[in-house]
Amino acid sequence: MERKAELLSMFKVTKSFPGVLALDDISFELRKGEVHALVGENGAGKSTFIKILSGAHKMDTGGSICIDKKEVEIKSPSHANQLGIYTIYQEVTFIPHMSVAENVFLGSEIIENGLINHKKQIEETSRMFEEFGYPIDPTRMAADLNVAELRMINIVKALNNDVKILILDEPTTSLTDKEKNILFKNIVRLKNNGAGVIYISHRSGELKELADRATVFRNGKYVDTVEMADIKGLDDLIPLMIGKEVQNKYPKAKAPIGHEILRINKLSRNKFFDDVSFNLHSGEVVGIFGLVGCGFEEVLGSAFGVDSYDSGEVEIFHNNKMQPLRKSSTRAALDNNIAFIPRDRKTMGLLMNLSVAENVVISSYKDFSQKIVNLINSRKVQNTADDYKKKLNIKTPSVKTIVETLSGGNQQKVLLARALCSKGEVFLFNQPTAGVDVGAKIEIYEFMNKLTKAGSGIVIVSYELQEIMGMCDRIVVMCQGRVVKTVKTEETTSDEILAYAFGYKN
Ligand SMILES: Nc1ncnc2c1ncn2[C@@H]1O[C@H](COP(=O)(O)OP(=O)(O)OP(=O)(O)O)[C@@H](O)[C@H]1O
Ligand SMILES: [Mg+2]
Picture 1 (cartoon, rainbow, N blue to C red):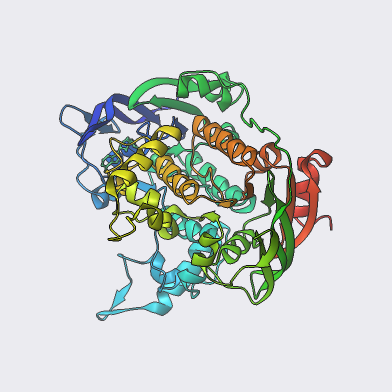
Picture 2 (picture 1 turned 90 degrees about the vertical axis):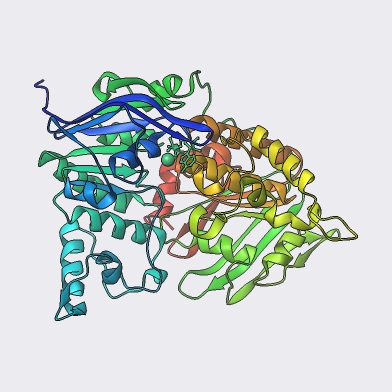
């Protein structure tokens, strides 16, 4: 096979933050027309690396970057754009009270006679989405869109440029197969036009499908670059990524199933879900599976009280019997030992400018205040947070570090630590392993085993069918806002679950 021409090369790239050497002497090469995957554990340095390329971070002195064999100094994000480098970041960014079109043209508004030409912006946005293969009404408010649609806005916006190098940092988080396929088609189109693509993901399936080569980072260091054609799958790279073999990706330990602890009874919320019923027992893991927009994320939010619902009831085991839980009250949920991991760690979950420790204890502050003076016992907070740092292997210089500076996967672990810290008996987990690496996923699964062994129950909502099949005792499948099937995991197959989720079977 003819070797493709070199497009980008980076030599001796180093980046240090206070207390952290995020990248240590990394070299990397990207060819024209290739998709190059970047893989490694949480905190390995992947996002930092691409942020240097996208102009968001400056590297330390001593390194160099060449594009088309010419050395460049990337001064800022807009300078990176001028060089043809566009980035889709790990976090979805949007302004909620602006329309799709306004979000797309944010920062590059079409101005005529000193005014924004909204009509033109709307037309242009329509055209861009049509071309991309994902029609959307450009006048809809961003606040009304789901995460998948918001992510698509970020992607379409970037691809509307003359892209030489496209960087995607975990772009498929919360995309369904439909959106993923559209995205992949566009990536292939770009690659066939000679662009180079750097693709970060923790999902092995999609990398096998898309990538030509993969480079592994570990602890800020370069480990190896492999041709995807030479390996069976990304699982072959796990030992390189985490420095050890993995025996079982889904180490489910069955716990004794006890009495009922949560009952969702004919819950309905206009436009989101309708007549949803399922229950959960002590020691049990119930998985809810469906496609993006099926309403399962909203069910979880309504059950916990972050959102409301129109009719139905949530019941919880309390004082030896099932009792209704007060509606729309996260306080009532927390007081009844329900713990929740929200969907999106950035906008709904973490308080980004507070420390790791503060984020861990925030749902259970009252356990940390001294009775008489109601002052926070900061030693206890620190010790608890240190404990979770150890248990969940959270990579941070200290629990006093501001959460914003942690890597994506490590932020996810902080969110999990918070849910665990709030002493739940019922755990409602919305995509608990989103953006978490293989090793850490297993640690989280093992933690789930511990919770069920101690008698807790877990409801987990996830778009990863393998995870649902691998870790749940029962599966509830939702399609278009309704429960279409509830089944014991051992009595079903992935194909059957998918058929229900797609609405082929009911
Ligand atoms: N702005 C910052 N200030 C301080 N430390 C930072 C900052 N950004 C990243 N780091 C640290 O650099 C290291 C690498 O983080 P990075 O976000 O690049 O990891 P990653 O490989 O993208 O991980 P993930 O898979 O979890 O997203 C981490 O230890 C992180 O805490
Ligand atoms: Mg990252």
